[in-house]
Image (cartoon, rainbow, N blue to C red; front, side):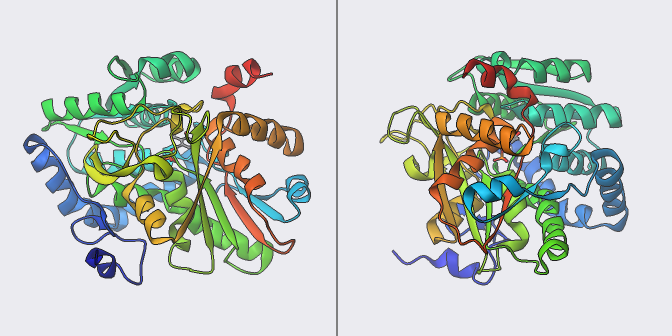
Length: 402
Ligand SMILES: *Cc1c(COP(=O)(O)O)cnc(C)c1O
């Protein structure tokens, strides 16, 4: 098969084409009822995002409210363990504890400029829900967060946080009662309230322009990394950038300004659950086939007749049967290296980082750390790992595992 869409993108992995395609993946597959909202977003997002007053407000909040730039930390003992040079991009130090707030702030500012007064969101681990509830509190906006019942149980501290911040948390009771189902409920809400509501998607998934918009808001991660690496090593370019992938937003942000630097190897780590072939996994690139999920064409874990397969991961933020279209393209084109780590490997990596560096990572992030064992580095290599979030929310799971 001749792949014509890839050639439209030649020279840049960063941007989808005008229809929102990265290679064969992306687009906007939406019900008629959402057409106006998505079209409006598509027509205006770039103009709004790059307006000087918007950028000023966004940058000021990233600095004074989120605490950016986040440090790039040379992890000496971890580096000794893996006989290379490892830097940690400390997104865990952001206000609310993960990278999600970068996107939540961006999208709330955008929603305000679109005249929307009501914000809805879906959440898995609760980090996106907390980030969205936080920014809505800051801006005085109504906030409704959809969350699978199973995630409400395993992420209790984040549910409490959202409630304290004034958000309404609505349990999603269908299917696997996790992120996929919460997303379905949020889409249903948006269809019913298209006029006054903005739907803040928390990852680089959903219909065009969401994947591109979220990647741009998260690209601050790699923008800072380049400057910080230059100070640390004299070069802006590392040999490797590694990140975990649920939908793929922290990876997209960590990769963004390196996507077209072909000397930089991009390593994406998915959740293998009990093992890729165990039937209890969320390793979408290994198990998925092209399909449409939540508004875009991407790789989706599905049965032969196209039913979405229930994923499994110990980490709520990675427990998703799809992946953003950018990542599907990075996988298919070979630009990205896709690995996976099991629940147990992630747990082990969390304890290793805690003991070696005094940093307790989020369970999601632990998957990226676990992949270090699958790599062979040179002692002179520079490896950047996106430390997407902190582990406070996962302490109960960590304690149960020992
Ligand atoms: C949500 C989350 C993830 C997974 O989402 P991506 O969009 O793939 O980044 C990873 N790490 C943390 C800490 C999260 O909260």
